[in-house]
Amino acid sequence: MSDIVQSRIGAGRLWLIDLYRQVYWDMVQFFRYRLIVVSTMLTSVSMVLAFGFGTSHVPAVGQGGASYFAFVLPGIVGVGIMFSCTYTIGYAFIVDHNRRAMEDIVLSPLSYGGFLLGRLIGMMLKCSLQFVAVLALAAWMFGVQVGLPGRLLLGFASACVFFAGFGIVVSCFTNEISFASVVNLVLIPLTYICGVFFPLENFGAGRTLIAWLPLSAQIDVLRSAIAGQASTSFAYSLALSLGYALIMMGVALYVFKNRVTRR
Image (cartoon, rainbow, N blue to C red; front, side):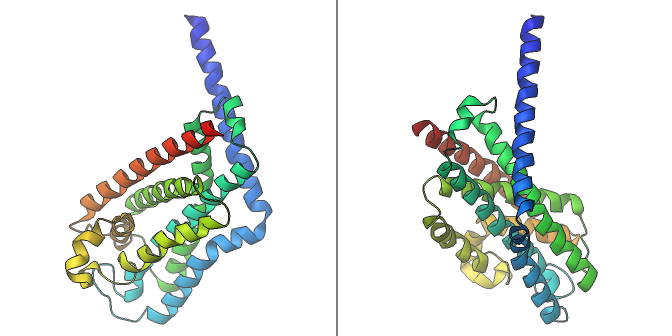
């Protein structure tokens, strides 16, 4: 019995060591190319500066703060997470496919889920740089404070997991040329209709359908957290956001495993 326990402990240690190495080298490669670090933050930081200087004195719309900028900031954060997570992990998997790195999973102590977990941790660490930079800039230059940090982290995590799963699924059926085209077909419409720039109430009869979209739910969670007040739809949006994240990551694991075993 003790031999079995020791064997499982040893296997667990090897699994953790492989997971750590994967995350470590992922981050080393990321910081090795400084232009990549800058480019991952450029869109969100530019939007914060543009909307901050241009709309910080424009009256608020809907729920979300004392100005239009306070309303739109959670949307900027959500869009930044959406694009950054999808592209970061999607292209990482395409590179892994091209380098035949997927075959190494079969020979390593890491399971398919462990490999995905390592990629997910690395991606969330990369995206957190943008996340922190945007919020710090908004607080320092435009006085926007986060009212409920715990809820903000929940919103960040659920959005990261969902769009990471989406990026993995798309990467399994595309290459480095077609990946961006397929992703943009989904992400660009979401950017404009999911309550990033306008309250969902403005969409009239389409509001109910739009509120079911993943980005709409995630932005509602982020907006409630930054504003420091619970909207009437917060619990519903949080449950929807977490549910979408779990389902999408489950689909990603299934698709990824089938892709590797077919190779």
